[in-house]
Image 1 (cartoon, rainbow, N blue to C red):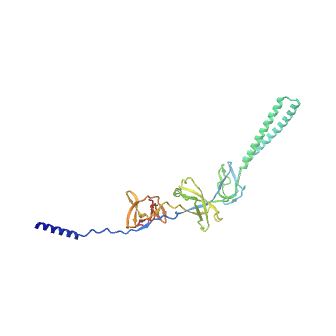
Image 2 (image 1 turned 90 degrees about the vertical axis):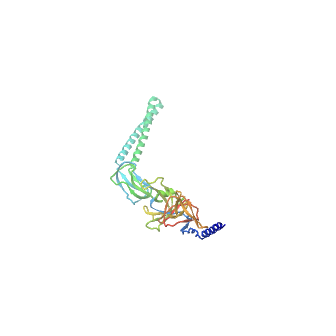
Image 3 (image 1 turned 45 degrees about the vertical axis):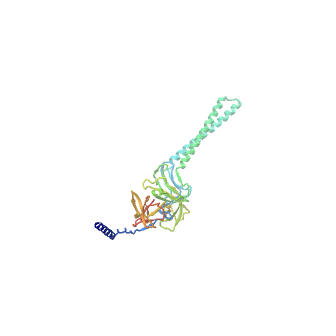
Length: 351
């Protein structure tokens, strides 16, 4: 009985001692910096530098090989339709034309004689004074002479055309933007002698990076254009042509923007800046420091406003873009949530 009382007293003492032991401290809440991620109202504005060019340009060239004896225009000259641009030495073509004209005259003389012979044989046959064979022979010579005249006449026209090809003329009104040969040079058929920018439409031509072409501009976008040396001179235009293949050296695509009612101050060769608002990205942006990793996949810490706790959520990261000196990625996590961040540099991701 005495031993039982000692055991009970020892148990009570141990229990009291256990109650006096301090409880483990609660985990202290750590302050974090968070932002609310939202969709941007509009896409990014992209600006590129380009050049004013004529909508229609023609490279004027001779159709013949030969020695150019004269070029009457220079870069900057304004031409009228039919105005002479350059001339080749026409000696060979003049000789060919004279030969063709002589052949035509000879064929016409033979034809005249054949007609007289045929007329006589026709009358003699009618009166019965000549055999049928003589008439048939005269008729055959007449037909041959007529064919020879037709051939000689065609050769003469060809020679005339060849002679006319020694004179190069403007096919439309416009301005000379480049020359390809000087007087005294031997040029080949098709070689550019003068490049003519036709009057009328104007294009703003830009070399667009591959990434912008791949992402795709909005449908039928309006491009704002301004002169670099005078931003007050402005115009608008629409994309009318995109090169199907990138330039081999720069890996950029040439894009032509047709300018609507170009102002007179926008002259050929002027440097301009074109601005276009891209389509809004299909996600939201978060700062770079918000990105972490879980299970080998990108993730962000999302704040639960009700109980002030955070949880990891995986996101899908797209290609980075640049904005205001910061690197960004796109994230299509639902909008309106708080994302933990602590850095200044930024990225975007896509959930």
